[in-house]
Image (cartoon, rainbow, N blue to C red; front, side):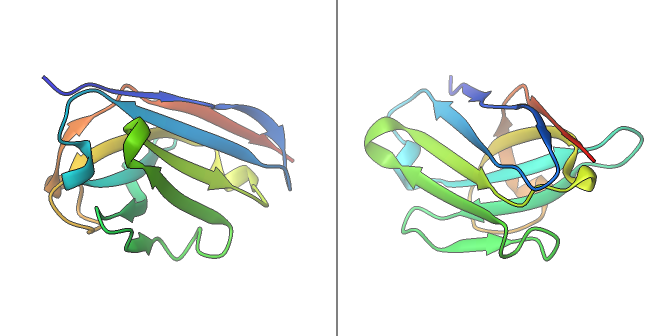
Length: 121
């Protein structure tokens, strides 16, 4: 059974940076796309970024130019570098395993437990 464990969340002031990590168990990490999603209180879960096995990436317009997704297949880990954070980035961030680099959450079959990111103004 594949498990995804996020870390790196926390509280920062607007304009600050955080790097989230998502460690995956299992031997087939390198063959899957990985995505980051977030959910703010009272809102639906939304797509943030995704990366394919070959390194292709996709970003939500709201984070393009500020967030960078990357992966280290040797470590079974995907990262989300978040710069120039805004209060509206406050949410629980989830990583997920998917079959393709897409924004649809239905395309992702394994999810982590989430990590809280809070950005204060």
